[in-house]
Image (tube, rainbow, N blue to C red; front, side):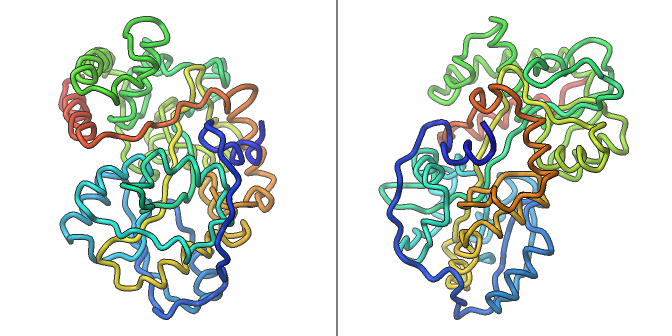
Length: 376
């Protein structure tokens, strides 16, 4: 399955065709400024220039490195200061809990510019609250295994395992993000029968069950913590781990890994593990305190305008756009990187983040903090 076929199938759940309201995607907004708050490697300078040229709206970009960071920033400001935010769709429950987003006027959005299956699937993964939509799809990506193939030449996509990170002989050679390393290790331990978690899905259903399972996973990683050279929390730290700090394997996002794959002519490789690449969708929302609301809708519709904007994002970042027809404008290098990372049944085997209950994040962060504080 290629990238185009996959995105049409959405979150592996299918999706009905949609009849979209008619929206002028090239209409300019009455507000002439857009305060955009996005992940650090999402919005390229070319995207900003193209949007400004087409709409006449000036973009002020601020960046963040985690869902917790953007959520806490907006909580502190009571939803003010930004016109567009791009949280993970499964984080929607956290935003609804603190009433930080305004419901979207779907009549103002070019819904046909978003892949129908992604639009439909997002509604059950955190974009809709009490019957109203607050978030719309922006992109999707994965977290899997990044490898320096000169140092570890025998690791192959669909054969590599999250468990390979924790093998003996890798002292101070790996990089992981603390909280998602818990998921990767959990998928590995589940696959070999060391824990019983229904591929980690049971940890999202019951807090008592979650705490028992996460306790076992945390203890496992701490017992192998000598392997960790660097914890990463954003894309730049991931790149530094491999290009400057001596890491040779790790669990990373696809974006920085795909960029390193291109820059090193394939020495750095991104591989889907046999337990399944951890997969997410990020979304666009308008904070309740946004000042430039019409500019925010102009941004959403520019992203959904025929695929060129989505492809600009995908080509520059290494992630994948949810915009209709974006795959038609990908570079040959982007297509080749995608094919190399997800051979065979890798796409069918993706592990999608479930919607996170309101209790989940704080509970998970307790185990993350325990892992970070533990001695090697």
